[in-house]
Length: 277
Image (cartoon, rainbow, N blue to C red):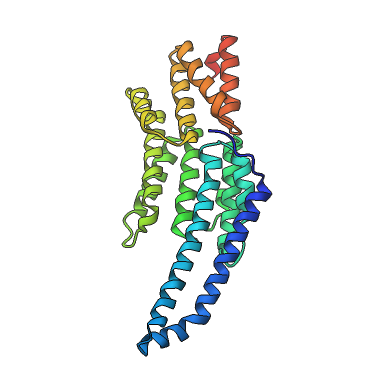
């Protein structure tokens, strides 16, 4: 994917402009709702048309903001540039779109995300521990457990990963589980299953990781899979195959720790010191 040349400031400016339009439309809707509803109740068709127009304005403005947010997410998922992604989102954490708790929680989450992709697990864990997910939304809770599971996987802590899997699956038992985050939940559940395969040294892990790779669309997840496959080949001293997958990581891994560690592993293989890994 061709790297987007827009700067952090340009993205932030665009989102704030679209959010501004949305706020104006919402305020306008609040002002005009009662008069238009009154006209509608008095059997004036203009009242119904006005209400429909306001609804469409709010819907259109909301869709524009959401499309821009999804476009920004591709900076992480397709361009593999967590630094830029985090920098943009930190500047968009403001009222009235987030309350005080939400701002504090997402600040910690995005910093933890940045630490994870920089390979700093210690700082990542510290930031996760400061998240008040009990007072937060279900979305931040899922994000919290997602990063926590990654932490346990990278730390080779199978018990910690099992506990995290149990915790995140217990969320699904809630009576009102939001449909809009079902896809994200499924994605996290799948990622945890992949972590479990690796940490338990499942004899079919390599085959299953290739199965995941065949259907994966996001570049960042592809890079992660190539990284894990490369490490599995490295364990069996299949250097040519390991090098192929690590080279893929070097080419597409962008600003992530995958790239740094893949380079180190290739260097170690060249010096025949691969057993350190």
